[in-house]
Image 1: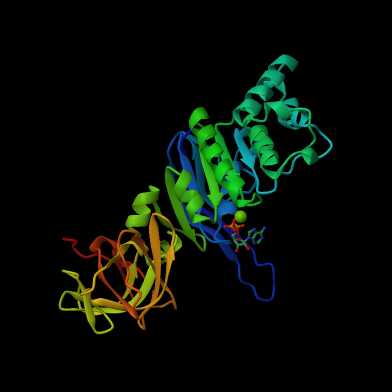
Image 2: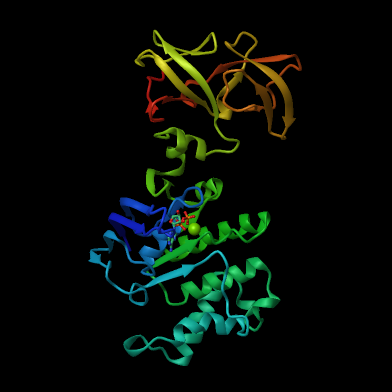
Length: 366
Ligand code: ADP
Ligand code: MG
């Protein structure tokens, strides 16, 4: 099921009458979520991810704009009639019911033409339980399950009505690191197996990057960029997106362009043809540094951390906006343990941004 958001907006009235500031939680979202894909809604806390999801589900009403499922305008349709499955961060299972009863619950409320026989219900519940691999736990109570298993039950419960759309709001935040990794791969598998259009909300860029077909990066209720994860990482449209994606994060320097060359401090570090003379913010991805004795960017060497296949070199530079510059270098490349480390830069890993509005400044990469 394709989903289309058209100028979707949600304004909350001020909580504090005196201060009088309303909150534009979601500001004029217009984009299309293709059928059968997994979309990651990504952004820092408070940027409007949950609000977007609740409006798509029908739990919250937009203050402006429209929502389409396929060609149907569902903006005024109630949550029950939208055919969406919803999973929240806290699994919200019924503690007094077994796993089986929890999964069956949404089916027992179906009325009219949708009403199922007991056998049909059981069959569906078992199908959903198998999909999330908890069919051996059907008679347990939620308190007898691990966090990861509880979250699987919540996902099975959302899937049992065979929704056209699956909405997941930070579903992994309550799990420990290893389970988080495992469960996110499970979600991806289930999504591929069922082909259900899925929207996955997270503030964790790595999580979103690793499982999404498309990511939507948001900031303060405004969409910053939409694209395939690698595309957005390689080609961010502004400094916020560049900084938000990537671990270790992009390294940011103050620089200037003069005569088609980029300067960091007094050193000309890269040719940037076609860019007008100006002060710029320079982002350099950790994998963009090549150790080179004669390289123009000379940094103070702080430490070298071995990570197996790669080494992480921590250095500093007076023009850097953060105390530590992190570069990731192939372990075969020896970095001398001197006072300084010198680099040449990979041009396509160097990103320039305007000092006035933080938008990207493009140059020709030779
Ligand atoms: P996220 O899920 O990205 O953390 P939310 O969608 O929950 O963000 O919130 C977006 C903004 O809207 C925040 O500034 C939040 O404080 C505000 N907000 C959310 N729900 C309400 C509400 N019911 N009343 C007033 N403000 C709200
Ligand atoms: Mg939220």
